[in-house]
Amino acid sequence: MTHVLDPGTLEAGTRPAPGSGAPFDDVTRSDAALRAFLHGLPGVDQVGAEQRAATLGTRSIKTTAKAWAIDTAISMVDLTTLEGADTPGKVRSLAAKARRPDPTDPAAPAVAAVCVYGDLAGVAVEALEGTGIHVAAVATAFPSGRASREVKLADVRDAVGNGADEIDMVIDRGAFLSGRYLEVFEEIVAVKEACGTAHLKVILETGELVTLDNARRASWLAMLAGADFIKTSTGKVSPAATLPVCLVMLEAVRDFRAATGTQVGVKPAGGIRTTKDAVKHLVMVNETVGADWLSPDWFRFGASSLLNDLLLQRQKLRTGHYSGPDHVSVD
Amino acid sequence: MPDRLAVRKTYKLYVNGAFPRSESGRTYEVTDARGAFLANAAHASRKDARDAVVAARGAFGKWSRATAYNRGQVLYRVAEVMEGRHAQFCEEVAAGEGLSAGRARVVVDAAIDRWVWYAGWTDKLASVLGSANPVAGPFFDFSLPEPTGVVAVLAPQRSSLLGLVSVLAPVLAGGNTAVVVTSRERPLPAVTLGEVLATSDVPGGVVNLLTGDAAEIGPWLAEHDDVDAIDLTGAPAGRALELERLAAGSIKRVLRPPAEEPDWTADPGTGRMTRFLETKTVWHPKGV
Image 1 (tube, each protein chain N blue to C red):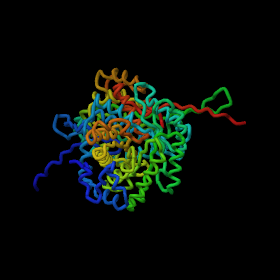
Image 2 (image 1 turned 90 degrees about the horizontal axis):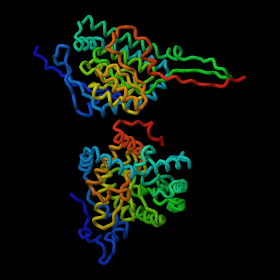
Image 3 (image 1 turned 180 degrees about the vertical axis):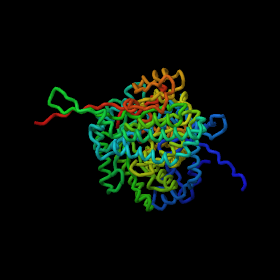
Image 4 (image 1 turned 120 degrees about the vertical axis):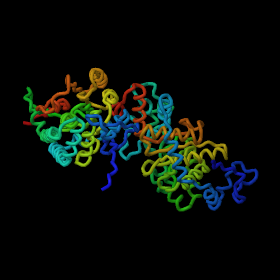
């Protein structure tokens, strides 16, 4: 079963004008057209999605495959600290951990990025200079997103000015849930513009969107507006990243690429704490969108405690006996 | 009256205050001393041991920080609940160890008494083992016993209740948490003890009981980096040295097994408690 959207099958009213470049330009022409398009997306079979996610979660990944999965997962981690108590010192120690997650084993890969609040992005940039590790900053009045657009854009510009090369924005869930889709769309477009060359990750906060149908609509909305990544959650709301939500978002990026040729990344964040969870996600990526997405450029884990569990499992595979929390750094 | 259909039991493990099946799905038959079927027990695997260590580590903070008085109360309450299950313990000990009903009652009485005895020790350890040290300087200098941490216990293979209590209670009295591998052939009193612990006030994870084979799980516990000490009392014959060698990799405290299983009715002394205690010394400047 596939949900690939062929622009040719769109209803007459929403079909792009002949000669239009992007196939979906037309659906963002007006609030009504956008709503018609988003509500015209195929509904998500919730029971089916949960079952599919549960089935994929039972795959047994062992020995060399497990070692590969652990290293791949480590290289996909956005090592995150988003606390009110964050200090430059904490960000620097996090950056040190990002460069060299396991000091006892130089073969352990570095993580993909460090994710901090915008005001600390400069500290992270300095600490990670020359390593190729990205610096992601959350912006747009993270985590609630409740601020005027000027404030949100200023927040983004500030983070980019501090050197962040990835921006994690939150969508206005209030506007989305009350059906003002075009407002959300325009905001993402404006933020994308403010990002300049920085990559834009759009946080849907699926825990607040409630249904999988909404998760699919928000995914499409974000991708139409130019998101480079779609991200499940802020990590501040429960439930955060769940396998069914991630499945729906992966299907959305797959369908979006099939329809437009543009590849968009996915980042589950929040609630992924164990190696087992991470491996389940990797299995789902491979089975849903294929190996094209199995790279830190297209799939990330937003996590803090996950990295330590990955390292413990890695040490277990390397040494043959169980390791303990005393053998990894405390975040 | 028609014959009742037998309710056959398949027991589970006791890990983190819950009763999970073995992750491996394995069970094995437990028979009485004459070989007749008693029940099925879960056959713990290395992953069950791993989960149990995580649970024990998680419970360590709360249990070790509880006041000694409170720990004593909690342990005494366990003895109370054991007393309520007296008949069940007698039946299981008699069947498993092949004892007469009268002899089994003596053993169960001794086990409960031993638990009470150790419960009484919790708030006396610091006075007996601690000291105010005379030092050559203007300092108050105190030494106090502190629990070692997560202790793996290979319980005695023959004495299924008195032996089990005699190795488990001293570990708990000092404030440690325990992962216990029970007697393989005679696990039922341990299973019942798990039910006792679950219905008393001992926080989940403080005691984790794995029914199964010490020869299989022992090495994983011995080399586990997050286990701080191991009691090899029930180690399989001839394997203790190997286990001690594995334990050396993470510098564990090791309690070596006696040459053969001791007479558990003898006065236990404080040796088993002190083996799993560390001494912390505090220097404090004296004011004028």
